[in-house]
Amino acid sequence: MTTTQSPTAHTRSTSSRKGPMRENVLSRSAAMLIMGVFTIYFLTPIWWLLVSSTKRLDQFTSTAPLWFTPDSFVAFFDNIGRLFAYNDGIFGQWILNSVLYSGVGALLGTLFAAMCGYALAKYRFRGREVIFNVVLSGVLVPATALALPLFLIFSQIGLTNTYWAVFLPSLVSPFGVYLSRIFAAASVPDELIEAARLDGSGEVRTFFVLGVRLMSPALVTIFLFQFVLIWNNFFLPLIMLRDQALFPVTLGLFAWNSSIGQNPDLRLFVIVGAFVSIVPLIIAFLSLQRFWSSGLAAGSVK
Amino acid sequence: MAITIFVVPFSLLFIAFYVVPIGFAIYQSLLTVEREGTFGPATQVFGGLVQYIAVFQDGPFWESVGRVALFGIVQVPVMIGLALLFALLLDSPLVRGKKFFRLAFFAPYAVPGVIAAIMWGFLYSPTLSPFSAVTSNIAFLGAELVLWSIANIVTWVYVGYNMLIIYSALLAIPTEIYEAAKIDGANNLQVAMRIKIPLVMPALILTAVFSIIGTLQLLAEPQTLRSFSTAISSTFTPNLAVYTTASVPNYSLAAAFSVVLALATFALSFTFLRLTQRRAFAS
Image 1: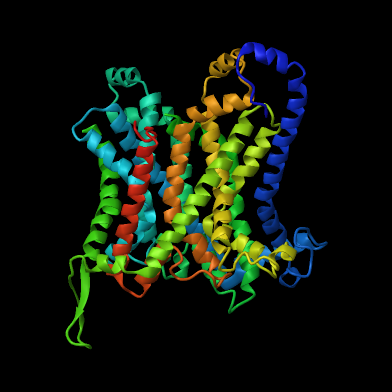
Image 2: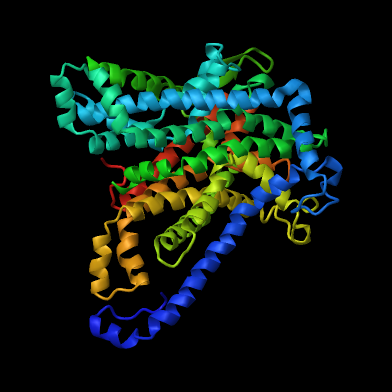
């Protein structure tokens, strides 16, 4: 709606009798135009990546960049086969590493954050507020500021260039504790915990049977949030890892991309690899999107 | 007893991988390297605030801080503004096919920063881009525009994510409020400006704070684009400066950079939360 009419009832009744119809069509078209233009903006790069990964290296600049060629289908599978075969299958190893770092890291990280947030919401104990405030400050500490000191500490104990160097620091999710606390306070009623207690259920059992179930939308959100954080983390693996076999897929593609200058064949693998590495994420994300919404709402509407 | 089981695992990890590194960074930043004579063995000795004096005299570091500050002043409001606009449109009766738009706008969030930078690096490239008619005439990767080309990448990735946070907040507003406003004769725009935006303010603040933190941490995108553009120096952003300094290796100075950067981030986010007078983070 574009008019700024006075909100009193009688001016409206005179000015908007035939207004709304025209106004509606106009503002509806404007709204759809905005959404349409930005859809192109958001999807074109992904479309380009899809199309490019169906080109052979010599077709890259010689064919239409945003449309397929007649042998695209064959070329696509050929490219993927070559990608996974290149350099003794290092790409498959990178994908596996990423899944391991992110999957296991996010799973354990969510569990620890949920237990801590649940305790902060549901029990009164000394130091509760102190813990919560320290964790909240943790949310505001930039993770990249920790990468260098972590490297220095890990190099003292000889843990750099190992799986642990990237895996262990990823287990900490202050934001997860914050979200769990809010969600536990709102969705796990004290009466239920009390009832479980009367039934003779231990506190830890109550958490796993009752708490986890009631908090599940928030837990999925924390898991996804942490998963993406670890999957996208760049500074920590960059600074910690030298052995290519330990790289997550982002660092591996970065390394390939940085050496296109010396080895132009790598361009193909960078593009196909980038496409292969984002497809599972996009699918996982889009299918779990409603969890994002509910969990994030709990964190921000508060 | 149960409380211990719940709290201890997280607390131990938090201490080991948050508190101790911060302490160690501060400790390392207070050291300096000393040599006996010109060629003697190097030893680390306590140097007081020597490294911090070096930080404040380091021109390239402060240029990089100025660069990300400029980036943040422009990019964060543009991104949050767009996210708010999309969220309001999705929440209005004006748009059809909401589900499709929500998915399409959110999809780029699944693309990691490194990969987004690789994709856009090709798209910006004067020769390899599908839009080479444009990119061969405008130097997106040249010294003048490259900062804004990076801003575009960051915006492309994060708008949909921020949109979703704001949209979720909009969905949580009880509809009775709108009915009351309609009876008072408010139109859609007025409802948006006077009711919806104030009510989603906590979500806007949350997204803004995370964006400020993200801006100061910029690393993956500029570092990746360096293979496409010579205009990005090894100290283009503060974190690149940290990385470059640590690779020298000058750990003490790099640690001092990290400490200054962390303090600046913390202070900025905290001030922003205070200034907006909302308790987005309070429980």
